Image (cartoon, rainbow, N blue to C red; front, side):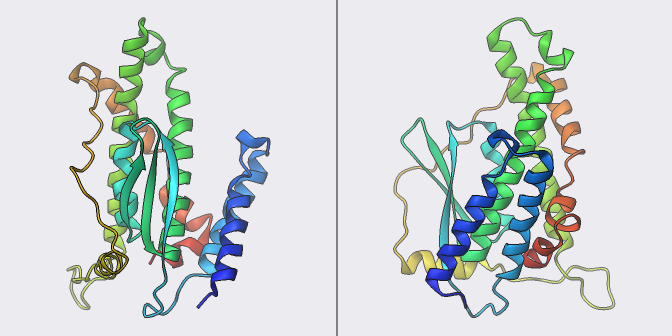
Length: 243
């Protein structure tokens, strides 16, 4: 079990590596190398014994809520975490709570997917499908529809990967029944008296039906985002941590 002071040092190291992005002046090679190092650290310090439960929460700033936020619930499920939002009505953060290494992976995957979504959105906004829209309102709606299709397809990808991680019953093609690890997470929330009052946040309203083509373009863009590679083949350590 990692001591609290060592865990803080690890979190600080990961935060410094995650800051190495092209937006902060790094080259693509430097940004990729930093992401791979994050993966290595998360894998190396994964908790092997499920009895050694240390819980943590991480907060990821998301600004104002958009249709992109419909993806974070699936990220939480994928990483065996609970998710809630914290904010003042204008600026929000997604909060992941779970075993400390699961929460760290959720933060990593959230940031990774957000980067892909931003890149795909910028590429879409250079297409004729977007530029032919004349008014700022229709451009906003077209972008919303594109992101709606994109995140729905990414959520499906996460679900498919998660389903493939469920072991099959020996000698059959049937998936085994696996008890959700969220039971321990929910019990810890009760122990820490983490409770919420009022109505849950409503999903962000999507674009109108007249933007179905843009939704389809978003779904098509998701096909070029290889989550398996990001979480496994190019960064082999994380795959072991998530299984």
